[in-house]
Image (tube, rainbow, N blue to C red; front, side, top):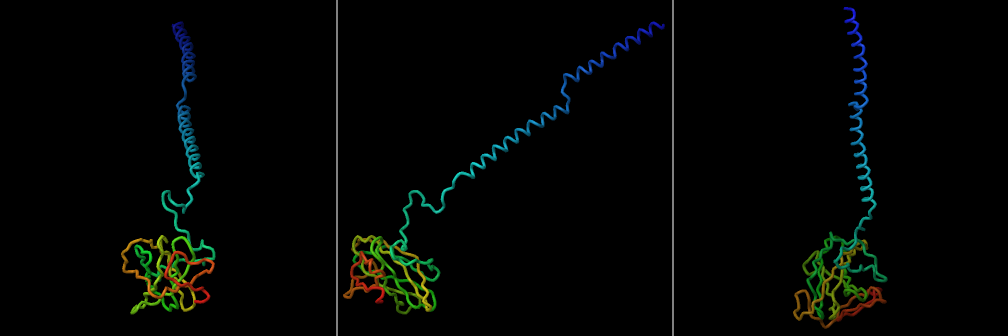
Length: 236
């Protein structure tokens, strides 16, 4: 009886180290669940960090790319006319007074004919109104005085001398002087020349007396006009 219990005890003691080794062996070859989760969390973070760095680098490159200079002429579009101030001795023009000076340019002018110009000046205490003109791209500037149209309170009219054939276009603007001597200007208008035999209603044949105009700069004569007598600015 004692031998049986002794044998059982020996077998029990012998079996215990075997189970312990088995458990230890299992721990040696299996990755704990907590460690596995740590590895899985580290991989996405590294990938996300790399994507952020690449995106930041792309944004920086885009910002450093030079932008197109604003105000440049679009390809294929004609360059604007040279401003009046580009002419030697020309007076510096202020911002056009479109609120008080109204004018609708004609579609064309015929060479060899005088042109009747009209403008609506909706200002009080107007001292004088003049039309400053020249041919399209050559010669100096001259001006003629404008007077109120018969029966009108705001419409002013003047007659410009005839353009010579080949002058290309009539270029002009209006200058208004108020009672205090302040000057305001209209925008600049350009009417192309049309070599037609028909005379439109806004033009007329030259008269017996030539048009009297004031030359702005004696060193820059008026070119491209006929039927005109010039006076210097100091004689107006």
